Length: 226
Image 1 (cartoon, rainbow, N blue to C red):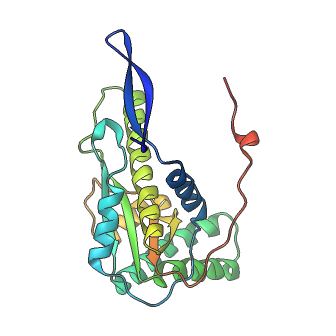
Image 2: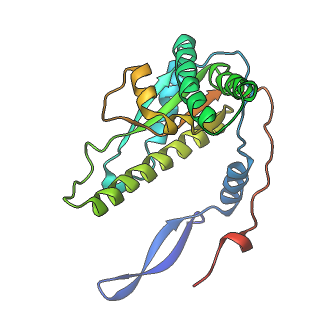
């Protein structure tokens, strides 16, 4: 009984005790673990097994989703040649935008080298995608947009869970947004189904350093109480 906390819950108009699992020491350890995650951009050359990556994705899919439709799809980029092709294709698309923004060629080349290195150096990357195939459909654009937003949030929750699952086994990860800017390029390069919408990219690997502890805004600046 020591690991149960009893609290009142209204059932059929009456307050009844309902057990809830709680372990304060474990909770504090979990909070410390969550706070210890860092974005890792430097990795060891040690490979990752397919079984390990699949196990991480299985945990990620325990995340909640809108209507429990689980609109996530995953592309595991274990082939370095594929990652190089993807980096090159996304780089070409980015260069077009950078030139339109007035960035000079020398700076563009520097940015593309850094971006490509972040994708090609890790031993593995996972591309989370969204599909609307099983989501609700509405005749009006307003509700349809809201449905799509719920799918985006569902995939984001699963992606964060993937990164935490990786952290739990000692792996590093880093969320990269670049595929969101050029989804058609990503789909074409990786030969993905048309219904799969790239939602960023997560690099995975054994960390070569501890990453950087970047400051967070204080709660007093981000929360209002009503």
